[in-house]
Image (cartoon, rainbow, N blue to C red; front, side, top):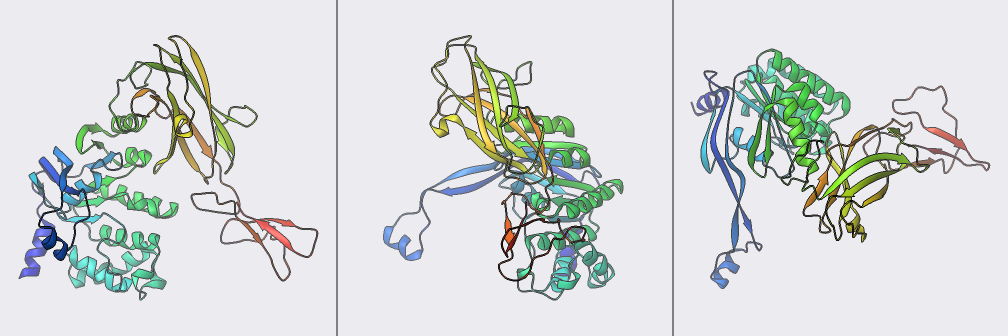
Length: 440
């Protein structure tokens, strides 16, 4: 009877909106010192000091049945906390949350998995937690295993799984529960490109069947392709709720301002307006403008700016992001270099040199001009530069490690024309008995 009640609670009903959130506030305690044990508390006769932190503040929205909604925002804006409340993992401190329908969630790596149990046992455990009977799990078992691609490792403890295998198995279980509402956090970015494509296609199929999807992601392209609408969170507050394209623009603007409020100008830039960014280009070491490069290529971001009022000193920086979020940030004052003084009308040109130690993908650069302490934004142009890093033979992953391999003992062969399961290495024969291959 208890199990039946639990299943009824998980399944919910499908009358009315899928999700209703009204005045949701979620608080956490931030301790100013490490909480001590019982002995330490008894001897010190005082409680550890802490302050309340509002991860979510008075958030209100409604998601109708069959809607696909993306939740986006900076790291720490409250996205994952919101999903945990929707999944009933965290109770609201204030406000009301109503969920109508069976919910399946994939919120963080390894959530719901027991490391000491095998993949097979975890399928049945998670299926039961999500409201399936054993016979229902039996019917869907092969589909789950085939989608996850873990059949050779079914009877291996999941603590020995890679992060990608964890995510594939968890996602395969969640989508095969056939939920009314699917909650997905950023964990899909852990999987490889093929798995991400299959997962997005499966979620698109869910959307066509009238299911409700709520997804947290930094991949704006995926959000725009999958979602009808976006909710943008900023410092725990809902700052936008509307069409996906407009939400992505709002998110990019918040990223460009480093998460601070700024005044939007007619040219699309943000900031106080004390400085204007006139031109931004990306060039190679020869000064030629580039939009597509190979991994580990040296480049320079050239920023031309004009002071619109007298400036004693300023800092010029750049924020580089990929499809999964921010990758790198640099400012001249962080490296001991200020720009100025600049009287009103004076111009300056600043070069920021860097090496793209990344593998294939698309990347965007946001130029930023701030005060020397990088606290006040004078001028920000979100995603002013877009460039591509082309695939390179010899290695796969995210970061270009500039790997090299060599045959220390034994003969070495050139592999031209031979099919391999991965990228074909570039082989360079040395003049002595050894030969060396370089990957990357």
